[in-house]
Amino acid sequence: MESTYHPPLLWMNIAHSLEAKPFILTSSALNSDFAPFKSSIVPRITIADYVCRIYKYAKCSDSCLLVSVIYIDRLLEKNAHVLLTRFHIHRLLITSVLVAVKFCDDLYLSNKHYAKIGGIKCSELNQMESRFLQLIAYDLHVLPEMYEEYLGKMLSQESYGSESAEDAKTDFSV
Image (cartoon, rainbow, N blue to C red; front, side):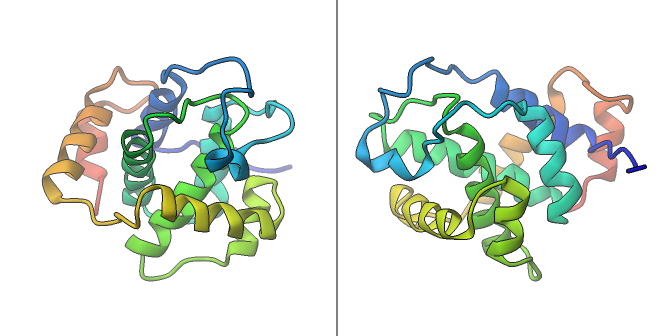
């Protein structure tokens, strides 16, 4: 029987933060710039469960997930015409985590491994990674002040786990 993984408070707060973003219900709002991220159906897995899956199998640092959220926000800021839909948030998330891992962590797994985690083909992930970098204009550096701002927001959210926000902050390492 497979053991249950319980991501730290930070990961769960990030998942709930992503779930709280406004989504539109139609896939027709996607334009060709965002086409690589479009799934043919809305994935049945919740964003929280998807984050748990990434936590369990990606073995990336906590800071990578936080940076991936910054990257998603950056993409949305730079591309005001892009609207989030349930048809592409999962693919966008696994791609932003992949990009963050490559930029932030010294050691990371292959694109093939991340594609398997995301339930997609490696060729699709490669295409999404390239498009993601173009959409954020290769703007990967995150200033310490911005990182701390996002970290503070995520840790100050209502606790979704059993540990307190203060405990999570104490245990968090960059």
